[in-house]
Structure formats: structure tokens, C-alpha cells
Amino acid sequence: CMREMAAISAPFARAAGRYLQEEPDDLADPTQYRMDVLRVLGGAQKHAVPFLEEMAYALEDREWAIRRAAIEALSDLGEHAELAAPGVAMRMLHHEPEVRSAAVECLGRMGLYAGEYATSVEGLLEQEEDEEVINMCKVAHKMLLESGVFEALQEAAAATGHLDP
Image (cartoon, rainbow, N blue to C red):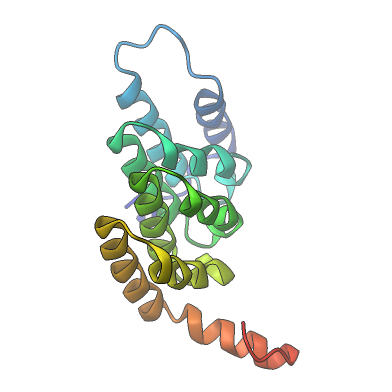
């Protein structure tokens, strides 16, 4: 978990993020390269915010190892990944079950920082047909319950006069 380390400096995070945006052509192992860049960004805390879109996009990668690195990086960012929640939730509509499953797991691991998108996991659970995605929805839902996000959404809705968050 990169969160336990000191934050990666802003210049280093920018350099890593640029490499995620513009991957060099001459890589011996592009998968390992992207995984390493995602791991660096996972430890960059607030300095990773400019690259959240690219990190969420990595959830769609054909390589499971890259999707796993993106899940871990986004969850390691904690509150700094909150702005990525809409992009992660959008991947729950993807045509590939593996991408939907990765997005659901990522939101679950984001916990409280999944915000209003935590309810999307409940919605997907009600309509999903793929068994692996359904199982991940159940796991993610449990993580979200334990994080307290649903209570926080209810409290926010009550404070603003909305009954249903």
C-alpha cells in the first residue's frame, strides 16, 4: 500500500503521469511499465489528481495486471481519488464483464470516497447478469457498508432535505 509512504513529489508524479498519457514505443515490457507508473501515481496523493482520468481509463485495459494496478492505485489515493469516482462508475456500464467487475471493486475499495457513486454498485447488483460481476458487487457492497458511505449519504440527504440520496 503506497499510502503508508511519504507522498511522491509533484514533479515526479507529473513525470509518471506524462508517461501514462504518452507511453513510449520502445518498451521491452509495456505491461510492467504501465503497472509501475500506476503504482507510482498511487503513492502520489494529491499530485495524482491531474491523472485520475487516465488511471480510471486503465480499468478498461485488456491486461488484468494493469486493471489490478489501477484498482490498487485509485484505492491507495484515498480522498484524492474522489474526483475519479464518476469515471470509475462509468466503467460499470462497459460491455466487458471484467471491466465492470474492476470498476465495482475499485469503488468498493474507495469506500467513503466513492461518494454518491456507491449507490451505483447497488443498482448494478440488481440488474447484472454475469455471475462474477454479481459476486464482486456483493463484495464491494460489503466494503462500502463497512466504510460508512451509505450513512454519510443519508446524513447529507437529510441535511439538505432530500429523502433519498
